[in-house]
Every structure is written in structure tokens, then in C-alpha cells.
Image (tube, rainbow, N blue to C red):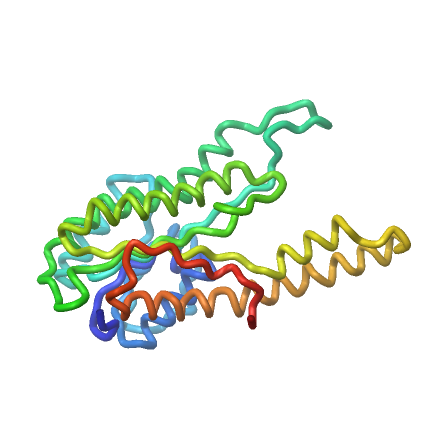
Length: 264
């Protein structure tokens, strides 16, 4: 599928670094983009007349039905959906110090944001994708869902996040089987930052010879590196991969991992 003049819906295109990078990449390649996010998000970074912003709550059927109507009226079609919603939590299942279990609502909120939200978007946008005239070699459209390495290698205090991201991968696989009959491709991209694992490893295995201030200094060093890389390399590589996936018709029913150490 060619990106130029195609119409894409990017969910989380204002709040998420990966979503923002995706919007900018699609616009640069000549695509038209509908940005979906919470109404409180600042959109001054977008100055392109080919992009419109629609504030929605991904758990609201009413909001999403309105979104579909607006897309249909303005463009008359939808060629691709990119789900970039991402919410994490570092709460333990049971806090032994406070003697309190994790609040069930917190767990549910993570699932709503990371898996139920994308599912809600997909189920209401499928009719628009299915209505497209199939293009030779690329079908009617594409759905790309963002997952995370936590789906496969979980870390401490990440039960809700890991469960939601594993669900994204499996949901995408199941969607492919269901939508292959109408020629809509489904791909999940697994994000992650290799330096994060090195940082966590150093926090756990710092030499005993280091005193407290030295250990904190090393840990802060990795925190700062991880933050910088997360804001540059990760989103940029994700957006580039979205471009590649959209343009490569043979990429279908795939789970692509993008969680290696940046630069390797």
C-alpha cells in the first residue's frame, strides 16, 4: 500500500511518543491522518492541513461511532489503523509493607487502555476498511497494533501491563484469521528499549564495593540514557517500521520485535 494520499487513523497520536512519531512520519510521506486522543492533549506540534484531531475516549462506543462518521464524511474511506495506546503501572499485586492488595480498578484501567480500547476502535472501523476496493498486492487495508516486550519478558510489578501487552499480540493474530477473508492485513509491533534491561540489571547487580552515592550515580546514569533514547530512537524506529509494514504487502499476520538495544 502506498502511504501517499492514503487515510490513516492513529490512536494515541498526541499523547504517546510512538504515536506522535507515527503521525509525523505518515504526514511526511504524504498520508492523511486522523489523530485520536484525549481532549486534554496539546496538539501544537501538528501544523499540517492533512491532519485532523478528534478527541475521544477509546472506551466510549458513542465517541468511536462519532469518529467513524466524521472520517466517512470527510474522507469517504479509511486505509489503515495504527493503535499506539500505552499505559503502564508499577504497583505490586500485593504490597507487604502496606498490607494491601493492588486495587482491581487499577488493573482494569490498564486493560481498558491497552487492549479493550484498541479492540473497540478496531471493531467499529472494520466496516470502513472492508468497504475499500482491494488493491492488487495490498488488499483493502491494514491494522497495526503496538505491543511491548513485557508481553514476553516481564519485570517486577508489571502484571497488568504484561497481561495487556501479551493480549495485544494474540488479539492481532486472531484478527488476521478473521479478517483475511476481506483482505485486511493485521500486524503487531513489539516495542521495548534494550538499555532498560541493562539499567535494571545494574541496579540489581551493582558491585558491593560501591558505596550508596556511587551506586545511585550509576543508576541515575542509566535512567538518563534510557529517557533520552526513549524520546528519540525508539519512536523514530517505530515510525520507520510502520512505514515499512504499510508498504510491504507480504507483511501480514506478523509479530515484529523492535526491542533490541538501539543502534544494533
